[in-house]
Each structure stands twice: as C-alpha cells, then as structure tokens.
Image 1 (cartoon, rainbow, N blue to C red):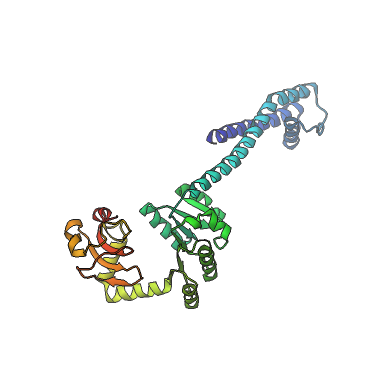
Image 2 (cartoon, one colour):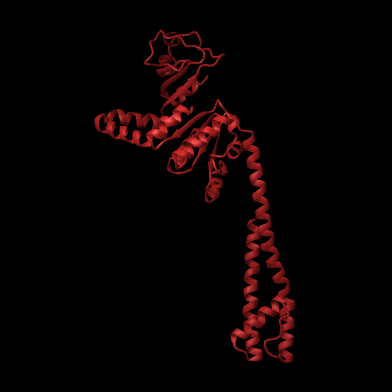
Length: 329
C-alpha cells in the first residue's frame, strides 16, 4: 500500500507539472491569456474532444500533439495508481476483517467489553495489562482506526443486538462487561447475553437505583453504580486515608508488585481436603488468605487456619506477583 501511495503522489506531481508547462506553452505560442491556455491544456491532456478554444497556429498544433503524446501515459499511470490504491485498500480491509473474525471465532473463556467510553477504555487497558483475551463492542465506526492501532479484537456494531454479540463469541465467553451510555442499553445487552449463554458472568453499570434493582432481578451478576462507588471512595478517603492508599497500591499493579488474586479450587486441585495451616501458605508461598467464597455463594472473611479447602471454593489471596503465580492451580 505504501509503494502505491508513493507512486501515485509522484504521478500526480508529474501531471501538475505537465498542466503548468502546457498552460505556459499555449500562452507563449498562441498569446492567449492564462485561463484559456489552462483550459486548452486540460482538454488536450484529457482528450475529451471539446474542440479548440481558439484556432491553433501550425506551431500550436504541433505543441498540442506533443503534449497529448507525452502526457497520455502520465494520466493513465496516475489513474491506475489511485484506482489500484483504493481497490487494494478495500480488498485488504475485507481480508483483514475476515482474518480478525476467524481469530475471534477461536476465542474461549474471553471477556466482552460493550462500550468504549471513559470507563470502557480503562477496563480495556486493564485487560491488556493482564494479557487476557477480550473483544470490544462499540457502534462508533470512528474508533476502528484506534482499535487497529491497539491491536485488539473488536466488533463495530450494536451491543444490544444478539447478532453482534454472537460475532463477539458470547456463547464461548467467560464474562460480559456492559458499559453502554444508558441503563436501558445495558439492560438489553445483559438480557441478550444471558439468553445466548446462561453461564456467562454479566457485569453492568447502572446510573439509576431502580435500574440497578431491575438488573439484579433479571439475573445480572454484578451491577456497579459509579456514583455510589465515587461517594464511598470520597468518604473513605476522608475517614480512612491510609486504608484507601493501601487498596490503591494493591489494586494498581503497575505501581507495586503486590496484588490480589482469586483461585478457583477445581476437581483435580491438590488443595482439596487440606487446611490453610496444613498448607502453610504464608511461609511456603508468601501469601495470605483473606477470604473464601464457598460453593453455595457464602463468603468467609479472614478464614480460620483449620478451614478445609473444598471443590468449588474460590480463594481470595494477597501477595507478591511472583508468589501468586506459583499458587495458580
């Protein structure tokens, strides 16, 4: 594509040069004004056959004939270059879209982010840092170039429509994060996702309390209220600034190697049937168990050292990144 662009620019430069020389040539030979000379040059080079502006002298006829012969190749060259540029651009765009869709069709247990606004952008940046598979869905075609530069999977379309979510692989996805502009859109996206994949974990934002209640009743797993969170954050920053500072360090991994992690106890996990004290997690791995979510959804905070790990438990731990990676079983 770049060589086509360069060659097209060179051809266009030659064409402008011939127009200038032709205009000056007719003005000098026939003693016409510049407008008539330019017009005669254009119809001569383009060979449209409109007829002469004024009767040509013998020298003028020779000059016009030479101009046609010399510039005809340049004109065809310029139009062929630009034609090829646009055709190849369209074709390459179609093939790129097809390749992207084929790769997305192979994704499993990925995340779908609906909406690329301020919050959506922050979520995408976090997913990129975590190096997990995800697809962004947004209906703004102007974002396509930015998505291509970021090198991420994306769908330009309406996230409330089932067809769009299917293109994003909602049937195979692990979670859907809906951050669309309105509560109604988020609700529709959540319902559509759950209808196509009942096991998908759906997280949405809600600006209105009534919408938050309705979303939870309809099966949305997590409903985030930005205003509530902002209010709580401000309150905690005022009353417990050190706690807030600690949480910021833990949750923003780019600032510190310390992090929070959740570990799912699967059927073949070596942790099953063993207690926290028996595993000696703090001494052996350098991590601390701060909570366990039981299979029935019950959350156990600061679990007892004698707590026995069971299949289906989700263990929330805190520790250094290198130590956490050792316990990802």
